[in-house]
Length: 124
Image (spheres, one colour):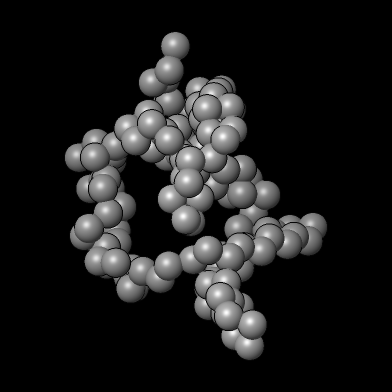
């Protein structure tokens, strides 16, 4: 995926311009996530799940952040998922099937974003 292909219409021009993305490398698809923590940090390992029996799941990136950073990550993910649900009307699994509890997931994510993401007031 080319970094320019990502839809950033949810960001205002001023907000987008304040972030330096010059060191951003090539994006990698991830469908495997493992999270660990110690007293000072959270560790999020990202990779690709093995599909066939003899393959091994590959982890190729690690994000290290503080507990506050992890809370911020939850917030921006909840906000983005809420906007995604409002735009595309359904959450689907990797085979394209609509998730049976998708509407409940959307409501919880949007409620979280409304309550805990600063400046997010899209939902009444």
